[in-house]
Picture 1 (cartoon, one colour):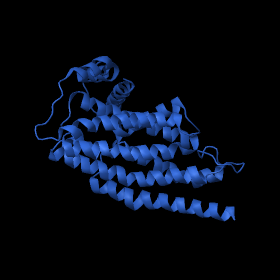
Picture 2: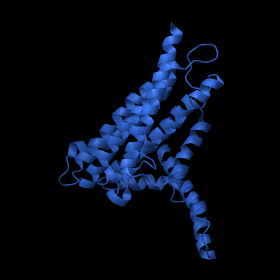
Picture 3: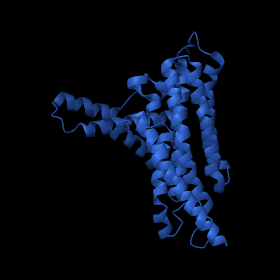
Picture 4: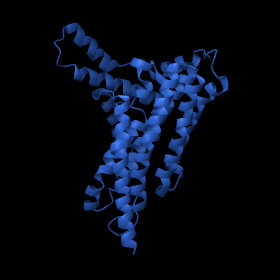
Length: 296
């Protein structure tokens, strides 16, 4: 239910952004009234949306692999909930590594969903999603390791986020914050990196054949992962776990969706492998070199 609430908030804010973006048009009184009504009253209540998905009959495609088809949404949902719990139960020094390990497993739910559906649209979405998540996980992991292993505060002690580091170190590591924020957009398959679910060409991507609770579980997993990545950004870059900061980062996801166009597939793969990965590895190597020299 909390993920459904996030989805409703997402829809309302996107409607409001779209109304703001279209404010340059010459609108009549009836059109203005309709847009204001859509922005203010939004959609159906959260309870009825969940109930509608819960009472629908699940449809199993005739040529699908039934076991893997049914297991894929449950794998995505369970891993998203375990990741959220990992923020609270794991040691603070290793939260990023624990969540990186869990997020690397999330690709299996998406891969199984695309393969088991026996549909060319679902399979293309699955291939795109696997390539996207694997390529940007490398830059994300290098950014987290650069902070978790080499960052020290003014007293020389290891610290978890660069909010506790000296100002000179903060400016030196500022590109890591940029890399991290872009990579979590790609990891959660949000605009402009939502090609695995490109509705214009793949209908709905890897979960195109799902309905009822299977469809709902994929959406809950997606929004839970957004909340986890927002919490991770708050812990590592904004001075610690804070509900207000997590909410602000979450709405930045939505604002990005309402303002940026979708990338082409070759563009976001080139951005990941030719820009962010070399930059994050270079920063990691520089930090490791300085750490080695200072230890001697």
